[in-house]
Length: 104
Image (cartoon, rainbow, N blue to C red; front, side, top):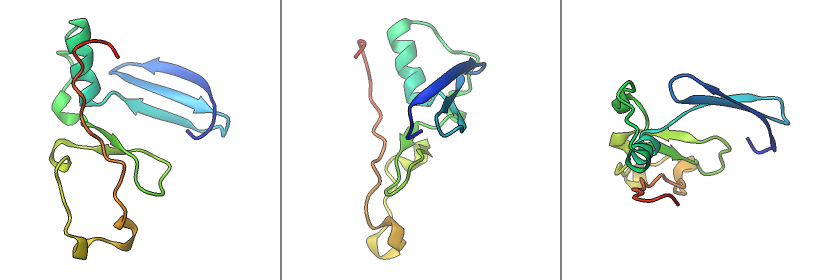
């Protein structure tokens, strides 16, 4: 949010919404990497969720305030420097999947 959170509510399908002082409510859905770690750590399967449709995680674009979903095919995608837009001169803080075998 960029502001202190003031409210949060859980919704169905691994989704939650949160609100902050700027009076904007944002909705979030659990990414695939979170679900994989959740199942591994708790033993609770999430068979009712189509994990392939979920993003792997999120990255924070340079000079951006909002996270950008990262999907499976984008993890190793490299754009040649001469084809990059001027706004893409600096790398994003890109998502790296983590595998947890015990709680952090």
